[in-house]
Length: 348
Image (tube, rainbow, N blue to C red; front, side):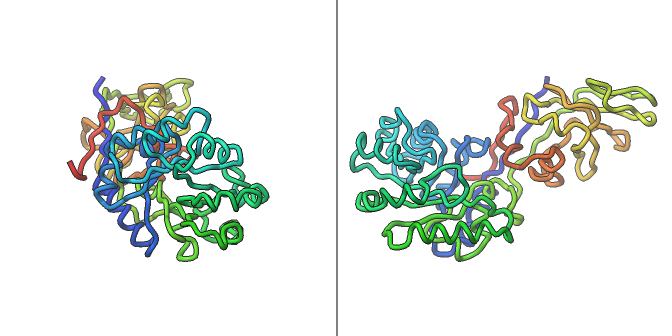
């Protein structure tokens, strides 16, 4: 089976970072490259961001940080959002990572196993996911502050909804928990940057906006996914397509079978809801997405192309996500290993 082609525009990622850095004003702008740079290849994306000017990077796990250090070399700061987990001391020390400590237990583990090693602090300002709760932080803040955290951060729960009351509530809690502490502060990821100056503090941490996703509406598109057309056939009125007979031809229709499916991250929820494109012309998916294939109604095309785009200028990650009832993050991070990945632009 011919491979689908996934084009990843490193120049667009770099330009999106520059745009968000401009919006961050005097704050340092880092880059979030966790989950293999949102599925697009941290080994290629991170050097492009470093060449654009990023000097601080965020990953989820110490293992990701160690791999990123091997890619970037000495110099850039690499923060680990899961903090200092059991067994992390060696990779943290060897790769010079900065764990963002999330609990009193992590604080104790880090101070005992790596005394004097840099660390950050994450505070829970209302998201109830990671970070010190206010009473926990009150009990250890003096000790932690004396040790000199590299960064104190929190994470906004509703930054993609600018009018949501939770944003102002978390901002107030963050200020209350950090006032008087002499350490750089960070609250804003992509959505937080767009909320304005009050949310910027000393460092911003854009993630999804780098990769062309909302809420950064001005982002340059980053990915194009072109699927090979394996076969076409005419389907007569009343005939069905795919598993479960979920689509029935209302008239004589020409159906193309394309080479990618849910094993490649094109989730079944797209069935009958998303589209593929031949240039500017949309063609609806019909029937169920299967493991390796999808089907599209191409009756109205003047000819049958060799490939059709399911991601590209006419249907971005958020458009496809809406069709599937999910979010752009899931679309990006689910893009499969079978694609022929082509990174374009960026420093070689």
